[in-house]
Image (cartoon, rainbow, N blue to C red; front, side, top):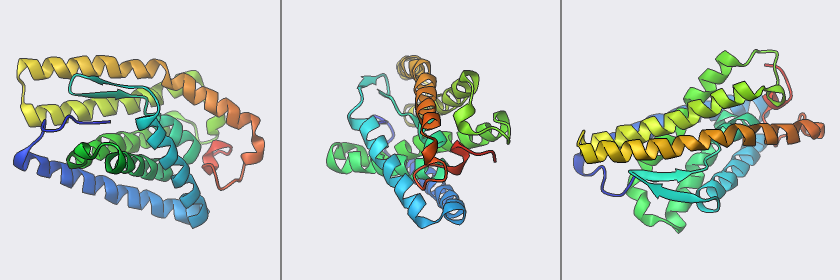
Length: 225
């Protein structure tokens, strides 16, 4: 996930520091809740799994520059459903940071924008999941419609934040708006794939009932709220 270098420059980039700080603060809150729920070893293990997965999403899976950013297969809803909100948020932030440090140092000035773009939709996804998934439903029993709604919410949030940063940096010029539209149209194609990936991973988890109670997955994967 990359906001193109130079798209937001000068004093305008200060806003990204504020949004990233707010996202980091909420991540700490989620981490505290997760610690109370399952303890430090479980949180650390799940965050490590999410970090490795996110890094692979950014660097290994296909990714293409389109318009104002890049199209990635960032399976945010998959990480959320399997690992939980806090590990997913930590993993996305750390995976993005590792990519910047070792493979794309030119992206580090944009880290605040990029991490905001990844995390805030995840937080929105958590709220939406609470609304559309009944408390007595384990995640392994989700329907395609529910998986599609979660994926659409996450990917739509990513597109919305990329559009915001592009307009914040370069205004409403016709060329900028065209680049945003091109990116948005290409990125939302991920929605055709992610729900299938979610259901495939959930089906695998359903077949591995031995993971129920494991520190490697979120408790909600197999159990009602």
